[in-house]
Image (cartoon, rainbow, N blue to C red; front, side):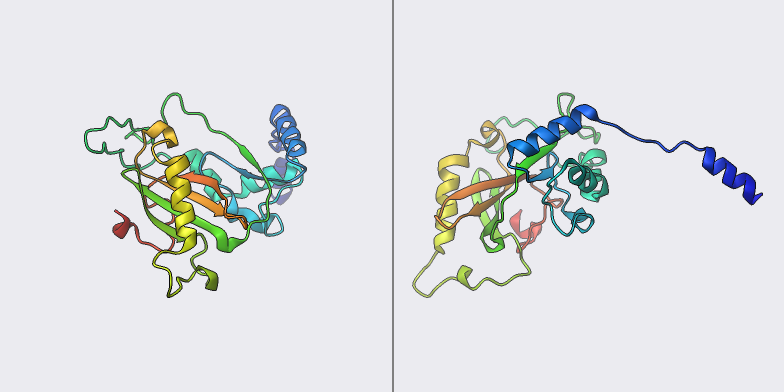
Length: 224
């Protein structure tokens, strides 16, 4: 019997997938980005799979991109369950706001397309990464991106009522993001930013408002 099973196993064809057009596009993008990139889909990056790639999201070849994507549960969730249990967008003070976060049946909008995004790899200082929470078009809370770490330079001094970094992020939000993101049609969302050594603020990502996005130093109950 064991011999028969071995014969059956050896005769089974192993499925192999080949995406020549995608592979070519990724290679071209890698070259344009200087040979290093970080992959993500519409919402999530495969940061839960970095253990498969020497502990980093940094990709230097096409195979690294594929390895991270196929090993990530975050990516699988985006592809299979991202539209489950999304709350409808609520209009604010009579504004007409379309629900572009999906349908009540758990299916994406008909015109929605999944996208693979390759970003240029940059070595960011973790202490200057922040998550911003926007509700009713107002920036209501800011959290450091890595809540388990202590950064002494982020502590408020006795002379300051507001931390200078908070003022930098607020000014950036009011100038470039407020009522501009999604053409002003979305009043609540989460935004990740980075403040560099020259006090310039850079948008890292936008995230869905709600419990599926980590509230970090806050709790979604107090944010809502």
